[in-house]
Length: 267
Image 1 (cartoon, rainbow, N blue to C red):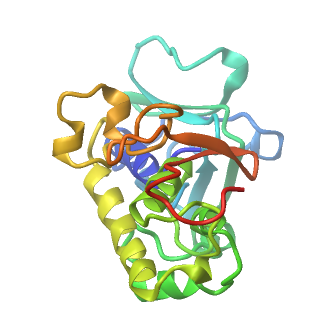
Image 2 (image 1 turned 180 degrees about the horizontal axis):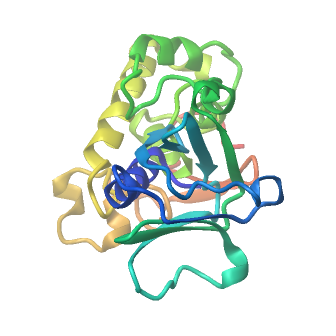
């Protein structure tokens, strides 16, 4: 599932291609909205909210989409061949005279009134990359269920919006806690620092083509996987202590941790 920084970058690409331009092509390939026609309307803006995308169109309409695990939006120049996947995977097409945005494998696609956007995203906690970011609220949300495993609490978008499986693993490593540690067992300064670190990491990567969470010293001279502390590094030496990184499933998703650097239960 894409992280909040990836979704923000997608919103930026869509906004550059569509915002301020009149739609000359509109095709929503989901049964509920197959007859909807947005042609002739100007795209006002495209924004991300956590992992959600909101494409706002004149006339008070918003096209809400979510990428989840496999979805993607691709932007093509007029006349360019579409290469994002087979035609049967296309769920949305929005085009103007210069560009065409094609949504592939979108598990969530709905057209709603802009005034009703809260029905789609109102449940989300403070957005790590949004104007509503509030570290105090995020921290209170995170600690509201003290017995909950830290990894689960970080992934719950109702607590704070934008963290995916990669950042979950990296943040647990930086907090020196396993993903299964009860969030209430974190020392208060560590919990507060965790929220601050989450914000710092996503901000640092919001414009990067390749996500990096390690320090320049640890990343220098290493391959692409060494841009991350633990994620995707099963059996490779911890960049901090050299102990082999371990992996296990947490709620059907792989998670990674260093058994020496991180304290707490393991599953």
